[in-house]
Image (cartoon, helix red, strand yellow):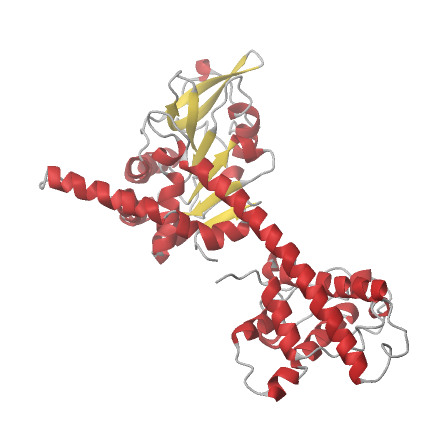
Length: 450
């Protein structure tokens, strides 16, 4: 992960943009913050000046103090909430530029009043809600997903005045609606809802944009990783994406997050254009190499047997195989590619072959060899037949559990799809592509630029 501690759920921004481009786009933020701090020091040399990035980094100490203070108070949720607010939530909001005004906020949905616990809010010039900081209280020791937590209605915690509005409860009198439901139906269900929601819990922060919420797109910030690993790029990204001046700029104007979103869309369009070019160029390389191979074998091209349309279709199918492999190897959570196995990752995966795009092919033997082609043929065969190969390969089997160790090896479930059916590539199945050709194809599909 390029930015440890920041998860891009359902592509709040495009994945490649967040991992590879965002860091460059926000360097100007660090420069501006540094210049502003320097100007403040010049105006008042005795003042304590800190950039928002440094202030966010400094949250490590109060967060650790909170975790230590919570030990041994499992039976007192009210005290836990008090400690979370005092030791961490208040300095967190101060570091990000938000007001700290914890309260139960009444909301009107369909003529009925409900309550939502807030840590603070930002309103626009008209007094309408612009951003809500919702308090996702976690009464336990283990980190929990803020969206799965509920409102604490007992113990005199978050809701202590029932006259302000209803909170739906379960049989034990505890809140029954998760924060995922509350945000969808209560917060965004208002006649005038806020544009942004920052869900604050002890262990995670969630940045939610109403315009993207329907697709469950959000940014998740894991505080243990962010404050523990101390990665400068991740800390700058977190401080930039979460700070008030970039979500709700004073005096109006376009939020920086909207500018970044536009950059993300532009970059995705550019990547799409690059991919179209790379795909077309790769098909040309494969097709020409197939002709070269058949000519070297004195077959096909001299006998008028080459069907240009059929060969193009096979080359396209070959490229779709590579795209499929790029995708599943980048998403081990899908449960197919066993990237957790060193045997597969280092010995068979497409990712291991991609590392060769920077290798030097110094000799003619290296260039004319077929190691990459042979490796890909073996990988395609394993996907089609499964690994270890099963006696009965007639049907598609359930996906293997890639997390279960297999004695220094790995498992691949047979994928009986047309894409990997060798009979649908009668020409290219026999072709052994030269290293110099396939390395260029893999480099093109990796979408790397100078």
